[in-house]
Image 1 (tube, rainbow, N blue to C red):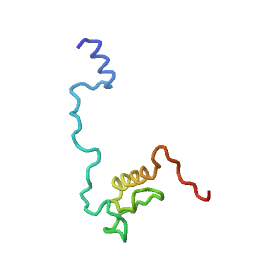
Image 2 (cartoon, helix red, strand yellow):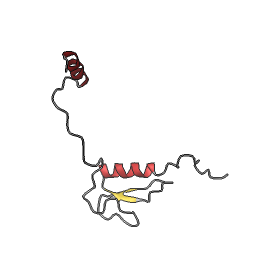
Image 3 (tube, rainbow, N blue to C red):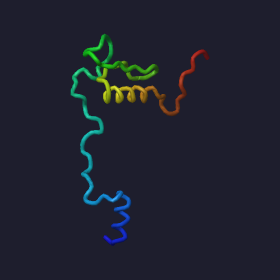
Image 4 (cartoon, rainbow, N blue to C red):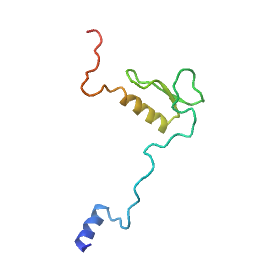
Length: 95
C-alpha cells in the first residue's frame, strides 16, 4: 500500500486505523425472548404492557408486541404488508 493510498483510506475512515470488524453472521432482527410477542391479537393482551399493532388494509393480522423495538418492527411489517403488489392499483371505495 502506498502512502497516498494510506492517507486516502485514513481520510475515508475519519482517521480510524486498524482492521475492520468481521462480517455480521447474525440475523438483522433477533427473535424476541418473550414467548407471546407477535401472537395474533384475538383477545386481551396476554401480558400487561403489550402493544396491539393493527394497520387497516394490511395482509398482516392484528398482533401483540412488546413495547419499543418489537412494537416498531411489528408496525413496520404491518405497514409494508398493506402496500398493494406492484402492477395493481389500490381499491377505491364508492366507485
